[in-house]
Amino acid sequence: MGTTFEPGWESVLAQELERPYMQALREFLKEEKARGEQVYPKSSDVFNAFRHTPLDKVKVVLLGQDPYHGPGQAHGLSFSVQKGVAVPPSLRNMYKELATDVPGFQIPAHGDLTSWADQGVLLLNATLTVRAHQAASHQGKGWETFTNHVITELSARKQGLVFLLWGKFAQNKAQLIDSGKHNLLKAAHPSPLSAHNGFFGCRHFSKTNEILLAEGQTAIDWQIR
Image (cartoon, rainbow, N blue to C red; front, side, top):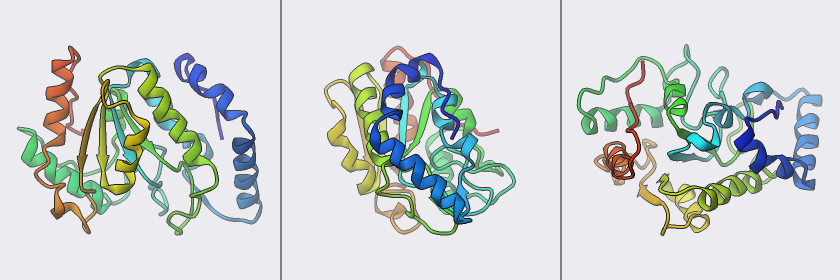
């Protein structure tokens, strides 16, 4: 795993990366690969969320659970897939909501959300790696401790962030966030299993921009090009 961060994230993560649980996680990942297991995303992409969204640029945090486990999908950003692969169902539903929520939004042909990350949307999964074709296979190995640390530090160090908490898993992270300092938007998960139970119609994309503008920040251009 390439672990070079820009100075802001370095100050938050450097010590955490050296803690025993992270060393054990590195050993687990080495053993996975030594056994011939395919691990996604590739090592150089594991920490992409932090590279595309420097600490001082974070405005929005979109929490996911697990990387996609199919070939060519995961590249270190929650809900995002690399260009050239099919747009997954949850992201398709996000696009449907955007089309009804944000005037002029055009549903794109790909699912690469890098442009969101580059504008300050931290696309953070709770678990940052996965074994090919085995969902949740790297849960409970230490990643959750690491990403909980990230959320806790963001809550403490920043002011006025928008946290998008979709589904029970993400909403359970609310206990790590100071709701007096930050904005928590909760809805059902955009998965086809739950999107009709409160994700569709939540208008979280336009609400996020309303909050950012009220905080004196620039809005997110949600259009994917």
